[in-house]
Amino acid sequence: MINRNRAEIVRMRKYPGIPELLEQFMHESGEHERWMTVHEIRDRFQLTRYQCTTVSGFLRRLQQGTFGQFPYIVTRIDDTRYPAAPAKRICRYLVRRRAGDYLCRD
Image 1 (tube, rainbow, N blue to C red):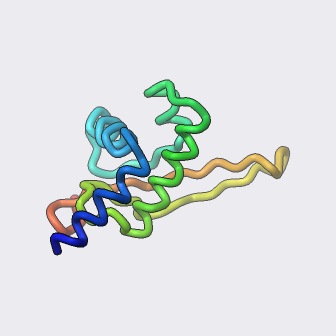
Image 2 (image 1 turned 60 degrees about the vertical axis):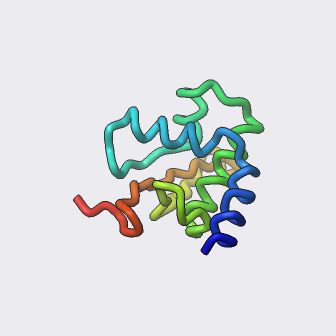
Image 3 (image 1 turned 135 degrees about the vertical axis):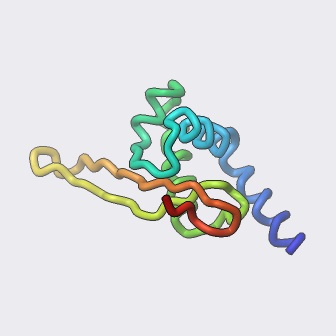
């Protein structure tokens, strides 16, 4: 278990500051579960495009369950493409707070 936690900490270092921003974003919303986009996080914290790529990568890793000690997980990703601009896509992430080792069920 100790080695697993240590490995998780090393993986989280790839996302400096992003876990804390996500926690703050969720705390400010006052919700245990919500849909969000990287654009919302970018606007709230005035992030650069490079940081947005990092946020997106972190959220995708949360869906895979990579960070078992992080208090939030991504339960679903909704990928939308726009017919008027096929190259443009918006991903929405359904983020949910964990309660211990179990998901919050309201």
